[in-house]
Image (tube, rainbow, N blue to C red; front, top):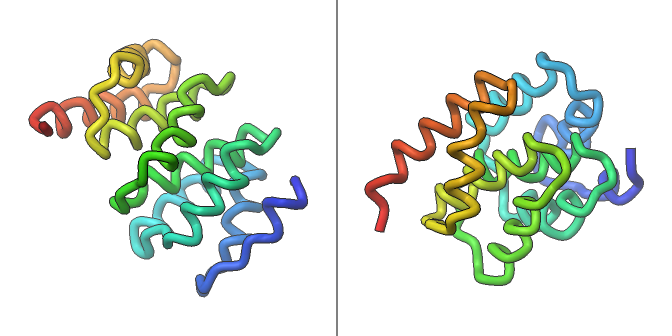
Length: 145
């Protein structure tokens, strides 16, 4: 666990730090808990700022995955600089980070060819659930301007 990941404090009854620790542990149950938590309590602006400033640049692939998951669980718009930072995750060595980043960008209206390519290729990554989510993302966003 990186020290910078532990320094984030949010006004969250479960504790943002506890969610980061679950992401680092990375079991299926931990990820299910994280997703359910953010369905009930969407990520805050501070959570997204942490993701952009610290999470996306972590050496730990699970923390980077957690960071892009925050964007998937939020509808909060991004500024241009924020979109650029999130776009760097499209080149991540971990396929799950690339796919989740592509979904988050597409959800916010991106029509970039690389985003579409990553989403269309997601079903080839040997993760059926994530492939389904990527396919659903393409269907839901195909009518966006």
